[in-house]
Length: 264
Image (tube, rainbow, N blue to C red):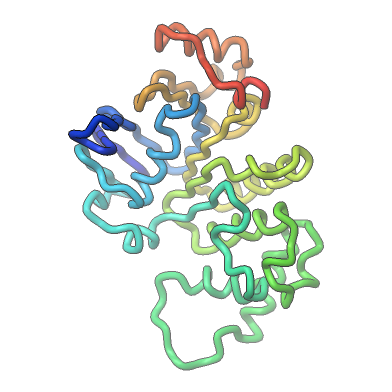
């Protein structure tokens, strides 16, 4: 479903601030893979997601989504394949528009626009049912402005918006990092359910090692723009933080240095 072939991304090339964010990185995801990504600051996690989404162009390598070469496609044209949820709950939604209006925007992604009622009676009922499945009591607040919701409520709706059209790839960039632990756990529960029910292929960046181990069917660890560890199946199920740190040291030849990950 997703294939990265020898991706290299260099920022400020040819200057004293040159930084190689990704170095000959290759990764293949099969349909239905839910991959968690862990790594220290500057490991290349978010850069990889931005390269997949088309926010950054690649300096070398190719990107395929469901067999289609999207390497040269700009971000807005890749949007038909990708759903994304950001770390900031304020991103990805229109704060001054109603909940149902935000869902309508997501529902019409990639469709032709015309002069007709934006939200039909059938749409309203479908959105209400979808919101009710989040189990947050928001089905009675469909005409509430998004900006008036809590961070957790907004992030849950953003998840629903990102998965409404069954994207080929779902990108989750530390989407619970700005939430309190209880709310983060609820959003992760919703994440698991939406990915499983829709059989989505997903990449989830996190700084929380416990979350990286507990969620998904596969875990990759990055360091210096490369994947140094790729664990799945029974090996992932048996992982502990201690084992993960030991494997990282063996693979990279260095100690894992990220207080956020270790204390998370």
